[in-house]
Figure (cartoon, helix red, strand yellow):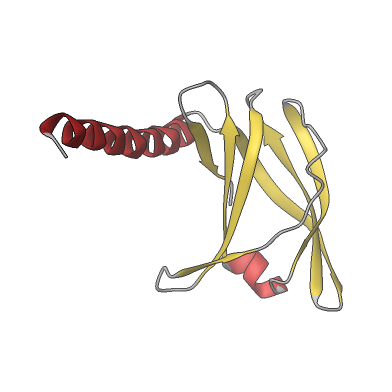
Length: 131
């Protein structure tokens, strides 16, 4: 590789790192989702179904949700959550459920860490920690 190629790779890597950093900063300063709360968790065999509410503060497009169980040492394991993706939500108070997961009631109430990614503009995804 020539010097120009190394510079391009370095710039590209720097841009990727910055977009992730800026998305997290934007999510902390101007969150898309706030007041994320459970109002019911119903057990059905090996699955817990979660119902709740949140406030969508900004009119951004939902991209993904990342749900983790975190232990007291800060180690995380990502868990799967199933939900109806076709429900496009407007700004304001929204209700959700049933969202299904194999996480236990204790894990959901005391160990959940949840991030939502939204597309608010063309530069990066806005990442909001919602729980």
